[in-house]
Image (tube, rainbow, N blue to C red; front, side, top):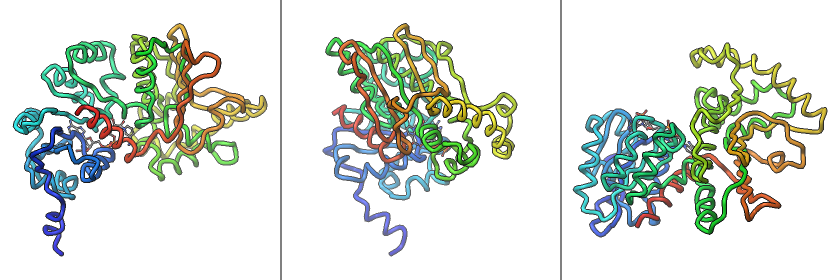
Length: 360
Ligand SMILES: NC(=O)c1ccc[n+]([C@@H]2O[C@H](COP(=O)([O-])OP(=O)(O)OC[C@H]3O[C@@H](n4cnc5c(N)ncnc54)[C@H](OP(=O)(O)O)[C@@H]3O)[C@@H](O)[C@H]2O)c1
């Protein structure tokens, strides 16, 4: 069968009786997984009316229905223009019009509040607004107060029920007192594996090959992504923290920070000696190293590598698990612990779809 015929076997995306229309920004790892989910019965009420990567976009129903849409967007489609995508949402006639942001673009995130104010809903895996500057967070809160709905499940723990649980507790009058956990799948894997038997650089290269880190692992090692997640949870719990109020102790030594990616990858061994020393010290005290995010009762937020005893919940993590330990006014003798895979395209895309379906 020809490729063209194979594409036509996909159910057309024109479903007049559907009530939710979406445009998808970002057709990378997560956006690609969402496109697959949109072709399953679970998404029968959802109609894709536009999709874009950073360079091109598509609003033609036949192209949108193609299983090779993601690849097509690399060389076909209109030039990027948000107005064209919003026009496609308006023309859909759907009762619920949703912009799904599966990018990490700060310029796009800075439009979320405006889109909400204009009557669109926004569902996002992009942390740049809610985990960015406090002014952006406040603009978002103002837009949400006027009726726009913001689906943010995918921004923390790749959809583990952290933010939804926190909101539910708050709606019952409970309040977050402290928060502690491992919020990065790649850093979780690295320190779950790191027992001193292999140099850290060797593990890091393996994690990169397995796709657990970003192509430039400094994005993970810097702790900035963890800090954004901590800000999102803290702000949702009522702590109006600014980005400068999170003390981030990253793992990239100063001389390696300004290098291009290739040069950094060639010097990974420079991470080994300092981490081996910390590991040996921790081991001598019966502890292990974990890259923790912590928020205390006074709103002090910290991100960095710490020693924890073997009895600590974070000492018993597996693979790329994330862990969120919440102490609240009602969960105050033992924390409420949410744990599980905190990365991965399928679960993240599922969190996006779940937020879209919840809008109907
Ligand atoms: N991967 C995970 O497991 C995971 C888990 C939880 C959350 N997230 C979050 O999900 C988001 C996407 O992650 P990913 O792994 O899918 O990244 P990715 O593979 O790098 O994909 C990013 C996509 O965004 C597109 N893009 C960038 N700027 C754009 C713009 N202005 N307009 C439209 N599209 C634009 C890129 O287009 P080009 O192809 O043209 O560059 C690309 O298609 C990130 O915010 C990430 O932090 C990811």
